[in-house]
Each structure stands twice: as structure tokens, then as C-alpha cells.
Length: 334
Image (cartoon, rainbow, N blue to C red):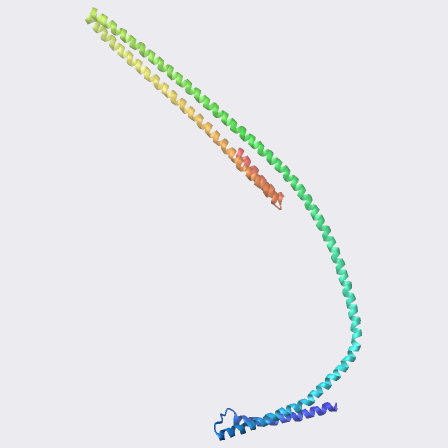
């Protein structure tokens, strides 16, 4: 304790020397601060050397005081370190056994906690494995049921497609048969009309030939009668000629009316035949459109099945797409 007191007193005395030097420092700063000495001259060099000596002396003194003041501080520090190390060693000798007991208990508790966590992890892992196995079993069963359902739907779709193709083929055959029947009917009607027209023309020619033969006979009779009685025969001839001309004109009129009626009948037959042909063409176009709709609906049904296989929520997707495909096929057939 006394050594520490003495060291502190000595340090205080040394520090007082700092105060003395610092008191004279202001004077030195005023005397030499910022001065440029004429060191090129002997006088100026002497003044510079004197000024340096005036500054060096207190600096050397400060360094000496620093060392002298620090020496007891260093000794005191070494003494403090030595005593602190001695006391620390005695305290550590007391603390370490207690710390060892605490750390041993903490390690035991940590090991127990780690073992408990390991057992809990294993228990949770076993539960998770069991749940995973159950989910996989349920998923496998769901896939099996879904695959069976999709197989049944594919079979049903194939059956419906075959039925639709059969109906479309039957419809095409029916339309073709109707077209052939209509064409045969039209050909028969045209044949009958042509035969009737030919018969009427032959009859008209026959009547005209009879009329020509009659006129020739009348002309011959007229020539014969003219030789017998020119005046009476001439009058009779003129009368007959006028009558014959009137009859010929009447026959020609009747023939024109008959031919006009024949042409009207032919035009009507042609009109009816065109109407029948238009109807057959319309039915054939409707059948072709229905078949095309069926062909267009088939990819939609196939796309629906593919989407059903790939979709996560297959049940809802199946209901929507399959119903759309069914409506498309119904629209095609209706």
C-alpha cells in the first residue's frame, strides 16, 4: 500500500514538471512560431540554432519526465498483474470443480433432450411413412378405379362412334337410294314425255299427210271437173278451196294449240324434275353435313378422353368435356 502511495506521489511530482514546461510553451510559440530564419547568414544561422536549442531543451526534459513518471506506473502494473493472477488462480481453483459439475449436468440434460428429440423424430417419421403408404395405397386404388372407368368410357365412346358411323352410312345409303330413285323417276318421266311428244308429232304428221292427200285428190277432181264444166267446176273448186283452206287453218290452229300444250307439259315435267333434283341435292348436302359434324365431333370426344386421363380433377373435367362432346354429336345427328 505504501509502495503504491509513494508511486502515486512520485508520478504527481513528475506531472508537475509537465505543467512547468507547458507554461513556458506559450512563450516559445510566440517567439518562434512561423518565423523564417535567415540561415544563409551567420547571424541568422546563430539565431536559428539558439531557437532550436531553446525548443529542444524542454522537449528533452519532457521525454525524461515521461520516462521517470512512467517507471513507477509500469512497476505498479506488474505488481497489479501478479496479485491479480494469484487471486485469480485461487478463485479458479474454487470455481472449476463447481463449473465441471454444472457442465456435466448440462451435458446430461442435453443428451437426454437429444435422445428425446431423436425418439420423437423416429416416431414422427414412422407416422409419416405410414401415412405416405396409406396415401399411396388410396391413390393406387383411385388410379385403378379411374383407369377402369376410363376404359369403360373409351369402350362406350368406341361403341357410340361405331353406331354413329353405322347410322351415317345408312343415312348416306338412304339418300343415295332416294337420289337413284329420283333420277330413275325423272328419266322415266322424260322418256314418257318424249314418247308422248313423238306420238303427237307422228299423229300431226299423219293428219297433215291425210290433208295433203285430200287436197291433191280435190285438186285432181277439180281438174277433172274443170274439163267437164269449167264455170261450175271453177265455182265449186273455189268454194272447196276456200273451205279446204279454212279447214287447214283450223287444223293448223289445233296443232299449234296441241304443241303448245305439249311444250307446257314438258316444261312442267322439267320443273317438277328440277324440284325433285333440288330436294335430293338438299338431302344429300344435309347428310354430308351430318357426317362431317360426326367426324368433327369424334376428335372432340377423343380430346375429352385425353384430357380426362391427364387431368388432376378427372371427375369434374370428364363431366364437362363429355357432355360437350355428347351435345356436339346430338347436334350432328339432328
